[in-house]
Image (tube, rainbow, N blue to C red; front, side, top):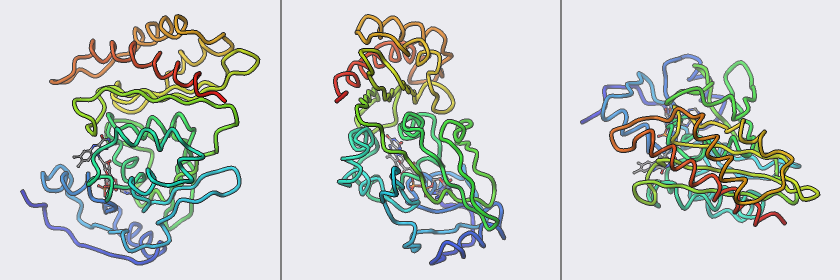
Length: 286
Ligand SMILES: Cc1cc2nc3c(=O)[nH]c(=O)nc-3n(C[C@H](O)[C@H](O)[C@H](O)COP(=O)(O)OP(=O)(O)OC[C@H]3O[C@@H](n4cnc5c(N)ncnc54)[C@H](O)[C@@H]3O)c2cc1C
C-alpha cells in the first residue's frame, strides 16, 4: 500500500519545526520512520503534514549535563547502544538494546520516536519509568517536562499535546551502589516483548531500598509495579522473597489477551521474569 497524500516539510532548525507543528496541529513528526512509515502505508496514520526532523543537527546528541544524561530527539537507537557514555552511566539501557528491534531498524529509529510511538510491548517506555526519566516537550509556546511515569497514557498514546515535539529525554545518573536488571521473553530476539521487566534498586545496610520495577507487554502501556516495590522496600533481598512478591504482583495484574499470547501466559511471564531481574539487580549492586 501507499500512504495517503500529505505535505512534506524539512526544516533545518528546531524553531522552524516548532512553528510548522504550531501551524499544522494534525502534523506528524518524522524521525526514523521505522514505525510511522509502515503505519502510513497501511493508512493507520494519515497525517496531512509531515515535519521531517532529520536535518535538525541540534537534536542529534547524547551528553552529560551535571548529574543528568540528556538524549536528543535525533539520537538513533544504534548510537545510544554503542555510546561509551551510556555504557558507563546507564548500563541498563546499553544492555537492553540487544532485545530491541534489529540492526537495520536501530540504525534509523530514534529513542524519542520509540517513546512517542508508545507501543505497549515496547521496552524503552518501561525502562524510562525505571530510570525516572523526564520527557522534555517543546512547542512554539515554550517547554515543559513530563515524568516518564505520567507520559505513557495508553496504547500508542502519550501526554504529548498537539503542536508539541519531544525534544530530549533527561535521565538522572543512578546513585552509586545501584543495581539493575532486565529480562524479556518475545517470539524472537529483536521482536516486541511478550513481557519485559526492568528494575533498579539499592541495598542499604543489608535491606532493599529505592526499588523501581516496570513491565512492558502487560497492559496497554508500560506500567510501574508499585505495590510490589512497596512490599519489597526495607526487606532483606532473597530469591524466595522475590518469587512470592512476583506471584502477588502477577495475581493483581489484568494482562492483555491477544491472539498470540494469552493473559494467563503473560501473568506466568511476570512471575518468572521479575525474580530473575531482581536477583540480577542485587548481584550487580556495587
Ligand atoms: C521490524 C521492526 C522491529 C521492531 N522491534 C522493536 C522492538 O523489539 N522494540 C521496540 O521498542 N521497538 C521496535 N521497533 C520499533 C522501533 O524501535 C522504531 O524505531 C521506533 O518505535 C520509532 O522510532 P522512529 O525514530 O523510527 O520514529 P518514527 O517512526 O519516525 O515515529 C514514530 C511516531 O513517533 C512520532 N515522533 C517521532 N519522533 C518524535 C518526536 N521527537 N516528537 C514527537 N513525536 C515524534 C511520529 O510522529 C510517529 O507518530 C521495531 C520496528 C520494526 C520495523
